[in-house]
Amino acid sequence: MRFAKGHGTENDFVILPDPEGGLDLTASQVAALCDRRAGIGGDGVLRVVRTKALGESLPPGAESAEGCEWFMDYRNADGSIAEMCGNGVRVFARYLVATGLVAAGVFEVGTRAGARRVTVEDDGEITVDMGPVRFLGEGGAVLADGPVRGSRISVGNPHLACAVSRPVAEVDLGRAPVLDREAFPDGANVEVYRVLEPGTLEMRVYERGSAETRSCGTGIVAAAAAADAAAGAGAPAVWRVRVPGGECVVTLDAGDARLRGPAVIVAEGDVHLAK
Ligand SMILES: N[C@@H](CCC[C@H](N)C(=O)O)C(=O)O
View 1 (cartoon, rainbow, N blue to C red):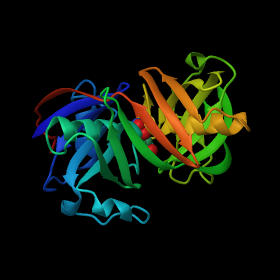
View 2: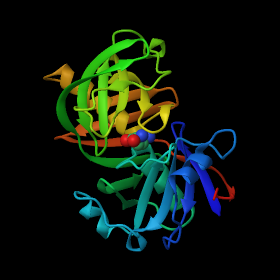
View 3: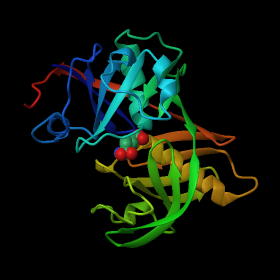
């Protein structure tokens, strides 16, 4: 099977072109592909499929994806399915353009959270209109080195964005955060962030289904939105978010968010899928 490998601020993905939807990708095949020793290695898999060829109906709320030519079938490294992946959409868009499947400019990508508009910027960076950012109240988690509290936020997928007062490098994300199952029935991605100056923050994330990653687009948006809300009147609305893998820019606009940053394809080849 052909594959490509790409990343957005070092959130890395195995890309599987399956335009006509013939591939019945199992969770164990995804986990084998994402294995960093026995496989290609990645935080997730992006299956590139025509929306018309999808062998499944779209979840409620994702109807707007029906009009998109291309659908990002996103899987976490453990094989679980997630509604949205902000860096994944940017890498997916880069792949579509690099392979000539779509002309550069502005186009839409279908996801399980609905259609997402993508802009290929003149400098090569990719901006995604991430849709609405929904605040769902407060929540908490227990990390390896203690409890944290923050905002429960949906960016299509669930997040808990927690402000911390120490450098994020000092937070122990070596173990899966323990979440309150009632507040997070589907689990959550947990971000720890610290505002460095108005409009700039640093963030690390423990992703549902993928453990700690070096960046997470939806998590970057969730952290920026939480910081912006905490800043109150006169908040910057544009946030530079530094993550271990680089930096992205989030623009918050009337409840919606745009995410801008680099996305690159680094390899392509053939891979044997596990049985
Ligand atoms: N890395 C992604 C988020 C991927 C999905 C997440 N792990 C989940 O299960 O919700 C991003 O860039 O947004």
